[in-house]
Amino acid sequence: MRAFTFAGPSAPARLTEIATPEPGPGEVRIRVGANTVCGTDLRILRGEKTKGVDLGVVLGHEVSGHVDAVGDGVRNFEIGDLVAMPPSLICGLCGPCRRGYEHLCERVHLVGYDVNGGLADYMLMPRVAVAKGLLMKAPATLEPAQLSLAEPLSCCLNGLDNYRVEVGDTVVILGAGPIGMIHLQLARLAGAAKVIISEPHAGRRGRAAASGADVIVDPATQDLLEVVRDETGGAGADVAVLCIGLPELVNECLSMVRKRGRVSIFAGLAGEGWSNIAANLIHYRELTVVGASNSGRESFARAIRLLSSGAIDTGSLLTHTFGLSRAAEAIEFVATREGLKVAVVPD
Ligand SMILES: [Zn+2]
Ligand SMILES: [Zn+2]
Image 1 (cartoon, helix red, strand yellow):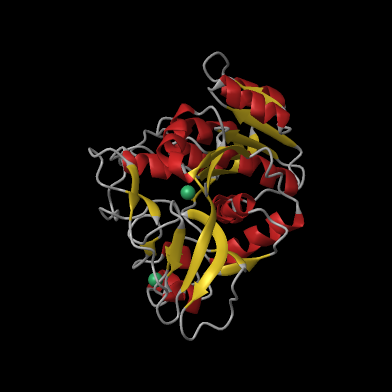
Image 2: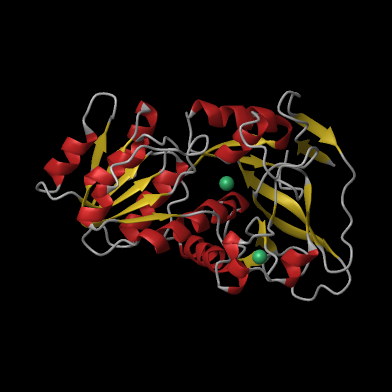
């Protein structure tokens, strides 16, 4: 089969021929229906993300497809089922797993990092994924590319659980990439009265406008803090969600929320993430600062339900499609920021 494998940051990324995996006991093989590209895939290829990434691994962690073969002992899946799974293969035994934060598992293996992923004709769903209920069925009414969005959506749901949106809130989202646009939709579903988007890329500001953001700010020419103050009668926003990995924006987020407001550092920050902040903003204004990383079974199942219900506008998120033979182009295209989610599909 064809597979887009990682040969190291200095080697040209390309499609290679590898053996089609045969499902062993407890394993499930899928015929990949779609794999949406994530910014992380690009960072891996550029050598910006190396921790936990194996040489030779098949990239792609936002994958969905149809069950194509099952190993001995697999009971819950039949040939043709549409399925997807969260990429974190959790241990189930460590402290975070036991406390219910399995997405923060200390002994996790990750699809597309050290487990072969979805930028390929076929993917083998590991035994732990089947046994632990990570592999989930979805209704056949969903297109595979829509179902692939369950991964980023579930990560955003986990973020939302941490930062919360209350009915009537004003929410500021920094960054109108795919993640920012998912937070926009979730903020609306959660009852936000006003969503303010800050985005330096003109094309993305246009998409944010088309997706119903109330106020759109170009941080290159406008003072975001001033806009937020104006839009909230001087009080500050209820929530700020940072979806751009720039450490210098953290203090801006702390400065734009109201007293007792919430700030989500949703994006992983560049480098070690060191950031100069006026920590007294947190102290005197009693702010809540939260993070978010990955997603577990519960948020992934919720993401599938949300997608199945039609509550998420996937059409505005899935902007481009490439055949698998053009996977390298698809990943490079993500770097241009011209689209939002790019789906790689069989060809
Ligand atoms: Zn991702
Ligand atoms: Zn664990």
